[in-house]
Length: 219
Figure 1 (tube, rainbow, N blue to C red):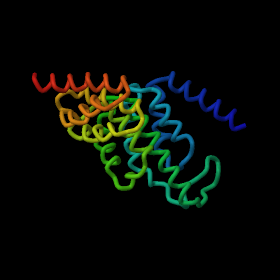
Figure 2 (cartoon, helix red, strand yellow):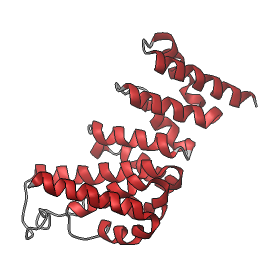
Figure 3 (cartoon, rainbow, N blue to C red):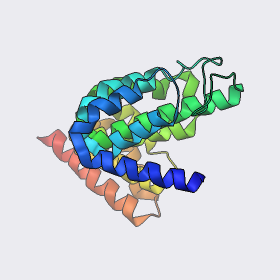
Figure 4 (tube, helix red, strand yellow):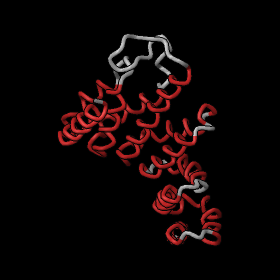
């Protein structure tokens, strides 16, 4: 039964993605619902699948990740159930899901989500999420994909160069490359990667990025 429900939900999301911009207003209403259910994470996922076509949803997505604490214990709800009190750990999981799905959607929307950059940086620096590797990693990837406001996003991206996942490092390095000379604070870290990395893809990406940053400074 769960598999059937998941399959039906996936098909429904694919249909909504196919509708494009026309489906965005209705999905925004779902995202902004005061009741916490699977529809909200599904709406965020659809926005991410739409990419730039979902640009009108950016303010709603920003609000969604900023207000992940809005579900009080007495109001948190399982899909289809009455309001019930739930355990602190489960409430924390629901909050993390909101932030993660919302951040991923903003990243997939790309440069059209540039208004979200200050909020993403704020969440990344928040003591509340200092030990949450999943959310911090999602933010690094999103900033790599949005590639806007380098003055506040580059320091977070430089921090992302320390990520143990190779694919995330490549995303970060490419984002720094695209920023050019404004990413000059990453030069030292990129040189260390070139010198010590055993991964050819990462090393080559760092060489190209360093060249782009140096070239930008010369112009």
